[in-house]
Image (cartoon, rainbow, N blue to C red; front, side):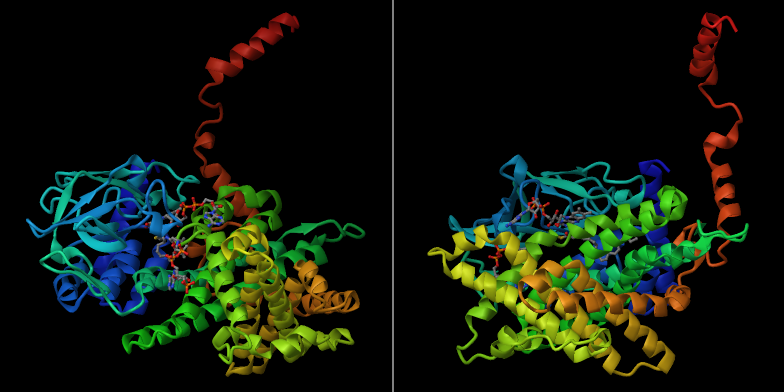
Length: 609
Ligand SMILES: CC/C=C\C/C=C\C/C=C\C/C=C\C/C=C\CCCC(=O)SCCNC(=O)CCNC(=O)[C@H](O)C(C)(C)COP(=O)(O)OP(=O)(O)OC[C@H]1O[C@@H](n2cnc3c(N)ncnc32)[C@H](O)[C@@H]1OP(=O)(O)O
Ligand SMILES: Cc1cc2nc3c(=O)[nH]c(=O)nc-3n(C[C@H](O)[C@H](O)[C@H](O)COP(=O)(O)OP(=O)(O)OC[C@H]3O[C@@H](n4cnc5c(N)ncnc54)[C@H](O)[C@@H]3O)c2cc1C
């Protein structure tokens, strides 16, 4: 499809999905599922996942009563317009202004520079009638920082931009189809006026007289919509990883190379330990991310309930967990999808393998909802704060509770003696805790050598990111272990999940061996034992690998992959796909008479053939 066709077709699908949701009708969870199977980025994502939650989280009761019924019936379509051409990560650096005019009781929205143009918001370019706009609030010449506003962008009769608004699509993005179904947009305001009651005023207010009234709740609640989306992105990472792994696992069982004896069949590539060493940790990650995603959903629900009761105590942890896990799981999934492409050899590079499109549509997850490095630095700040409070009498809680055992974890030596000890959950956990704590404490010690903490922080950024990642990996390992300790129906299933849990943990040790050795969390002998155990786990997972991906229950239609077909009938179907290519419509290609024939003829003449 051309870009225009792709965009229009996605509009068709989105509107059809919305019709089904109402007609059947579907519950909220089922509606999310439907969107998932629609399988293309589209304006519904931003409307439901960001525009509506932003109003719910930051609007007053009156604002919610006014705007939510319209949004819930999709009589208005909204998007989330925060990022600007010049500023994305640095939200406090946004330039768009919203200046209160007491004479007209309005805010004047203005884009003072080119870099202040909104740039990137999904659904903005061509579809949205409204947006939640983030802009610097100015009253009486004073800048109060960034606040949210509900703004109508387009005329409700003919969809044309309202006077004072310049709007459009930012152009083609990575990949052929991928994210190009979405109208990520730009937007400029030229002194565009909105009524005062369209500032989202749950967190702070501007009175009729133009007085700014800050609220007594933390201003970070303005970032709440991002926290909510980051949480869903973790579960989505599991879905995308599982999809790539399903394709690569099934195909690895079909594909045979070398090893034929006396004219017999060749070896299935899934039997090579190198293939297993690349594939099975990704399979384990798909399960691990699913379980940590479930836990994160619980954490998010819990913090939401607490916030409603004005208990803000767990907000920093919820922010650190959603930011860190969003970062860690999306980076691992993007890398994992690419690894799955390579695991499928040359055929993985074919469009019909389903992997190139999956990669292209998935990879921006490392950037949207916060650049992955920037987000790990938020985790690092949280960790440094926690370490600095150790010994102050304030016991660390939640995911940092392990830091409360700092004295032990800084000194302990791993008691792993034989390979099977690596199947002991307490020993594995302690290894990850020791490594995470020691990396965090080492950063804190190095920071304390700087007179200026901020200067020290910028000097140590790379180490801080690594410490943050170590903490996030510990969370994922610990939540997998907790899952195993809970209720899992079926002993066989539990055994399979146990194998995957230890593959996940031991492979991380192997991959980040430098961290584990340099922090003396394990010895090099213990590292070899971990490798030994890992190989044994691969052997145990091997007979069940295909069943473990079948368990994801993806249809062939959803996978969209010739290599990942459930029936394994890969080669005939590769031919069928190839024959569908427009280049094969004719035997002699268009351009033969123009380019190939004259070239050949010229050579034939000169060779006198
Ligand atoms: C086939 C499949 C198809 C499609 C995809 C499928 C699925 C997708 C699934 C779901 C996706 C759904 C929707 C659509 C997808 C994409 C939409 C993307 C939308 C966007 O990208 S919106 C824009 C997002 N932008 C960002 O994330 C910007 C990142 N920057 C920031 O968040 C912050 O500015 C910061 C975190 C970098 C902070 O910067 P700062 O240090 O300058 O901070 P402040 O001074 O602002 O704050 C300091 C203080 O506040 C704490 N803090 C910061 N953030 C938060 C928060 N969110 N919550 C709570 N607390 C927060 C911080 O820790 C400091 O605390 P301290 O105690 O003072 O230290
Ligand atoms: C597909 C897609 C959809 C999007 N949808 C929306 C949307 O709906 N609404 C919306 O408002 N926005 C949206 N965005 C924008 C997105 O949120 C931003 O692109 C994202 O937050 C990253 O910001 P940036 O582009 O400014 O990156 P930058 O911050 O410019 O990052 C560039 C580089 O600088 C590094 N860097 C930046 N700051 C630091 C630091 N402090 N320390 C160390 N390194 C740093 C980063 O790690 C990165 O390597 C979308 C983006 C994409 C790709």
